[in-house]
Image 1 (cartoon, rainbow, N blue to C red):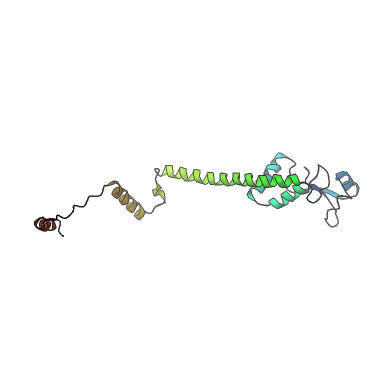
Image 2: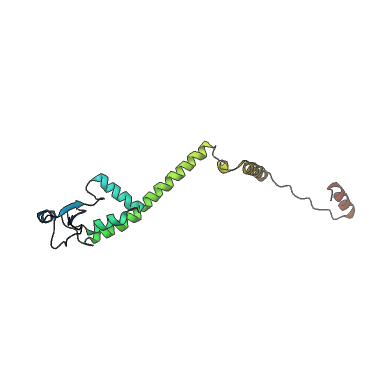
Length: 167
């Protein structure tokens, strides 16, 4: 896939692809043949382009260059390659999920590392007062509640029950 184009040196416009069809004709007519800034000419630039597409930074220009491309050293024509549309849609779906998962994975990994350093508890995010409250709640949660003793029905027992329980 060629992401190069023929440009008029006077005004920087792209001549019609029916008039100037390839690099040889471009140079023969005293035009300039230029590569796009982001292209797929070698692996490093290709990875950088795909990373930009996956992170949605400057991806529209890259996609337009790819969709307009025809063959290597051929003058691009607007929206020639339908297969590139399909490729970019699929890559955006899977590539963006990959970068999102990578980002979330780094965050979770760092969180787990900090959790291990602090002894494996959630207390690393708490203030001192919150830690005291949390410890008290943990102690209370581990104790079984005392069953309330029902008040006796006989009057004498009920009076003694009230005296003993301070009611």
